[in-house]
Image (cartoon, rainbow, N blue to C red; front, top):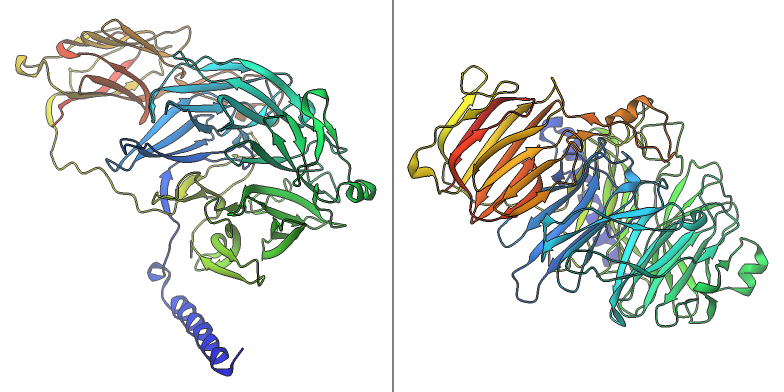
Length: 622
């Protein structure tokens, strides 16, 4: 390097240092804080069920949306849908009252007919997957009823794929049989959303470790790529990292060079962490460094179609975590050091010492990796999102800090699949983290979901006209067991409207009619504790109980297959929005049900449902 280049490089570094120094001379309130934009106020995810977020654009441009899934500490599985054509953001309640465990985040699959399929399961608690399919292309506000896929052994981490060599099937991978990587083939959902398993499930590998952890991706055509560990790094030292591929045309397991390792239906491939295995299968072992506990964050392919892997090496005492970028050269595996990741990122010192802040490779630019690393900022040492760009030829790694001076940790970054044309590329968890499950001992994962994107709100300058309203201070509210007929002017019988109700359901189990009008009604059943929407002859049954899984706080921490009692909502904010002959029901701000048909306000009643309407507002939408 020339003296001029050295001088320029030195000056650039000094300018950066001076900028940092200048920042820290400012008072706290004036220092630059960037934590991303909030996508969801409550939510978390693990990093082994993917894609947990995806972008989709239709060929005609009518669909241009991103979908991000997560689960909150109350056991509510949710998904955010952002429509870039209208700049509108909607949060959907996929399933309430689920096991409050961050392993249970949902995953997405856009079907060939553009419907969106959402998978989710309990954390190694049941031999089944749950799923819902949108009734309209690209619109998860129209999710159909919840259905099940029964499996062999309990399930965790659904990862679904559709490949062009077999466009009539879904290939689903997960941690299943004997806690090992498992695969099955499903038929495509029919008009009712029904599927069946027509091949499998089969255990793909058998490790000497109890719980191999696997990450998957596909080449979109004929291969599912998987990388997996010997077991859990807490229990395995060393913990090796392996790589195989599923050939969907032959239904065999192969190594990266195409050598057949096993026929999946005939039994699992047996892997060990013994040196003779590495000698006999040199390209199937990505890393076997003595004394280090490997864990894996992602596998994808680069522009050459070769696999690249985001991995972390954890020291024997679990105090040191180092991020590495592993890639296949075409002849062998190479690894490039990216950054020191500190130790475990969370606030609980006595558990999960192998939980790093997290890594995510950009599938479009596979030499760019987003990492969560500890940085000293305005509020002390917090985990920030840093983008590392790797030059494979030179081995040089450049770093660009994305978040800075954050007040809480930014962890588990994820790059949305198929998002190369979208402004929203990267999302992560923001906040304090105590455990992967809610318990009396620890409050779980009270984090939010943030993204590297400036949200635009749908523009609406018109002020809604209030037609009728009532509060607890008025007589125009519904007391328990009573019915109120709302006075609606005749001129407003056939308008687009929004009816908002604040309900108190503490006194008794809600049951009966909540509200009704011309050609529509909303009720709740005391047996199922789920609402029911009727519009004309169409009936939509909600999948979502009016309650949470907060009762887990009073039981032991762990996964034991039990469904603990529902903790009923004490209050419910209910909104019914009718526009363009479509009725949408929101429960506590989340879309729950949608039905189409003509609805009117003639004969509007707020009903006797064993609860009280503390406040209601009826507005005319403009």
